[in-house]
Length: 333
Ligand code: KG4
Ligand code: ZN
Image (cartoon, rainbow, N blue to C red; front, side, top):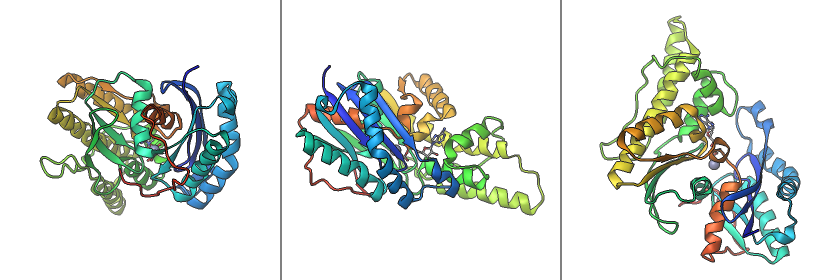
């Protein structure tokens, strides 16, 4: 067996641990979701951190068991240190640092968004570079230009809501449960995108995003329809909203790829698990002849395997973190 990284991710409401060999082979990928938050229609930070505390030891143990290794075989321990909920981050980070210290092995802190990007290299280690990468999650919607493993630039990001956040908020307005993205996608599947909601393209050359206006447009449509006694077809509203978000994501990603002359397009983050998004981006990119890579849905949403892959590339460069590394809830890139 080659280089073995034990990775931990606890930035939000998933307690996740993975064992990744040589940055590509996922020996174990354990994700304990906290269903309790459904009851509140969103993540309750205090509850999330307490659940992480309960889950972290068994989740890490299960990852080691599945991988068929003991701690003695681990070459480095990695964990997300931000951005995210501070109480949640602290559980995984402190546990990882403690393990690394006890094992006398390097510790590697990983930026959550960098982790999402590396879901791409986990699945496609030969991804053609330079690439344009869209990260569309619940907290971020950003476009990156990936030149090499050492060099990347931010091309644009959301000025207000993230795409996943818009899915969650509109899902709530439609009376769906949390997390809203997958539920909204299921509902949209039964409807037609026959209601026009405005797309925020922003300035002509801007690669930034804005989704709060769209969210408001859906809320206004629902309110006006109720006030005037007009029938509301919820699946059509869901399909129309989904199409509006995804059209903007796809068009801006292609714009970025063409402008930068990218050799490939990568899409990651929770929203990239949406089947309509996956199909739309692939179809649109086919027309301009740029290959598209989207990891399997399980590696798009939060997981620790992506953190293990990102840590592997840092390991190769000898970039280890100090055991003083603190959780940074608003960690910039
Ligand atoms: O990457 P992720 O798991 O966690 C964050 O870093 O935020 O992304 C979660 C976000 C949530 O907002 C969720 O509603 C959205 O991704 N999401 C989806 C789908 N699955 C998850 N949005 C649209 N369609 C989906 N199938
Ligand atoms: Zn995430």
